[in-house]
Image (tube, rainbow, N blue to C red; front, side, top):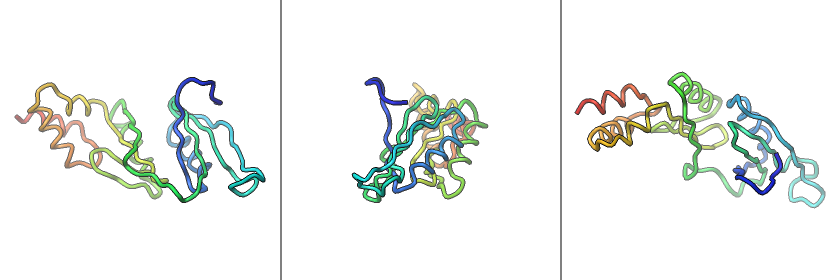
Length: 162
C-alpha cells in the first residue's frame, strides 16, 4: 500500500488508538485490508516500539491512522459518505457505526466511537433532495431535516405530497 506518487491517502489523527481504529474499520467495512504498521523509534516523539502509523484500505480508499496525541480531535467539518445500495445496507452501517459508543446525528450522520463522522446515504436520497423540481426537492429536504437515519420512502412521500 505504499505510495507511488499517484492518488490520495486520508490521514486520520488518533490519540494512541490508531491500530484499534483500523481493526474496527476493517470489521465494519468488509472490503478492506490492513497494510504496514510503523512504530516509533528512539528518535520519538512516541514511546519506542509503540505504534506510530497504521496503513489500511477500505472500499478502495487508502487511509493511514497516525497516533499523534491529544492535540487534535475529529469534528463534523469532515465526514465520509457511505453510498448504500439499499435500506438493508444503510441499516447495517448505521447500526455498526453507532454501536459501542458511536452517536446518531441528524440527516443521516453518525459519529463512530473514535469520533469520525460518517454520512449513511441510502440509494435514492440524493436524487430526492436534488430533484429538478424545486418544490419536490424542498419537501424531500424538509422531511430529511427531521430525520436521524434517512428514510427514503418517507422522503419520497413528502416529495410527492405537493
